[in-house]
Length: 182
Image (cartoon, rainbow, N blue to C red):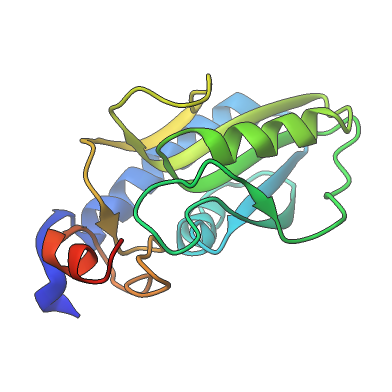
């Protein structure tokens, strides 16, 4: 698995240090409010778990399982919700957490659905934000790291459901997904 990594962008200690600062930003933004966090599965699982333990606010945690990559290296343009019911967010301050802001399609679809449920507010937090033109108008309110337009894995991010368990974020070798047809 490690042989499939071209280079490491962010080591585990760098990520955890940045999460301390990100948690402080989120805590300041929601001070005095009760927060509802909606984690986007499966990619944000590790990021959300590590981040939320650093936020000393009352909060609720819900999860949504959606997909837009469907096994490839780019969004297919179709966002599939894998559950019928959305979390109860009416009148609540909502923070959607995802692993990466890439095309914007997934987060745009999630935020649109949640806004239809009359929350007090909806904000977005991501571990990574790619520097690129997005297919949908959306930006993140809280960002761990900025990256170039490369295919990354680790720390929750995957390719074909592999590499999520790597303790760092690294660039996947192009040959790995080209051979697999990604």
